[in-house]
Structures are given as structure tokens and as C-alpha cells.
Image (cartoon, rainbow, N blue to C red; front, side, top):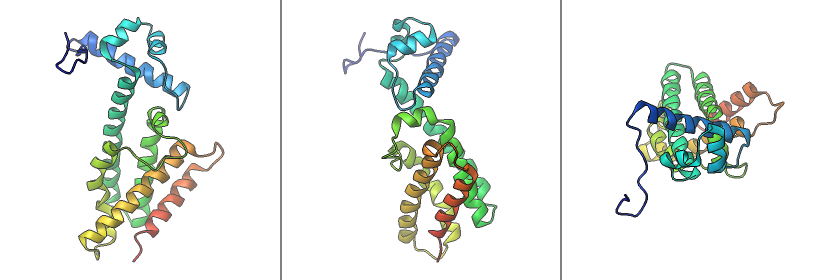
Length: 202
């Protein structure tokens, strides 16, 4: 049976066994992505890694791209939740400590999702977070700037958030995905926090 669009209908996990299989395929996909950062595995490689037939993979996912899309959606939700928690913690801290908390939180979240992020970004475009990430984070991104610069009008605050949000994402992605093996991670986090805090100077 097909949808009106002609796209084959995929099985929805209604039983515990189906849910477990779907999660298994997603878990094995992450492992494959981690093994070869930045490159997509094939559907056959995913089937082999999960020790299932390729037909089983196609029962749940129409392509490897649809697997990556689902992993990306999971990553977006987790990153948004992590940052919300970090911002909540930062609100009770002094400005420099607050900025370190935000940078550390976002960098750690990016590190946890490194396999899927590595497929999405290359060293040349790490500052371009996909729109699904930026959208939910915009309200959160206003909290600290509004606290640090209560003198700004709404339009001025929006402009500052626009710039610092992109800078924060880029800095944290660079630390999480592209730092040199011998780099001092804590020093990089502190340096990024100082750079961002400077943007809020009067």
C-alpha cells in the first residue's frame, strides 16, 4: 500500500519488538558513523552491522538518509535540552562563569553527538547550524544577553543575539569537532567564553 504521494508506507513500531529493532538500527548507525567520521554508511553496511537482512532495514527506513534524519532529530532535541539546562544554571552565576557554563554545556552536547554532526558539518562550514537547531534556541539565546545588557532596546538585543548565537555555535563546534588532539580543551572553552563575553561589553 502507498500514500497518496506514492511514497511506500514504512512500518511504525507498535510492538515492543519493533521499537527495539528500530532503536537497534539507530544505535548501529551511530556506531558506523563514529567509525568513519564524515562519511555515510550504506544501507547494506547498516544491515550487516545490525546482523539483520537489508529488508529489515527497509521495513523501518526508506534509505540511509532517513536514518540520518532521525538521528539528527534526536540530536536537535538533546542539544536544545542540554542548552536549556546550561542557561538555567548560568542565570545564577557571575558573567564569566555563566559564559563558561554555556560554552561548556554546548561543547559537551556537540561532542556527545559528534558522529551525526560530523556528517552534517565540515571544517569549512561549522558555523552554519541547521535551521532546526537555531529555531528552538533563539528564545534561550536571549536570556543571558538581556541580563548582561539591560540597557539595550529590543531591536539592539535581537541584533546582538543574532551575532553571538552564530559565534557561540561556531566556537563550540570548532572545539568539539575540529580541535587538535593536543589542544587544551578547558583553555579553549575559557577563551571562547572570554570572546563571547567581550561582545556584551558596553
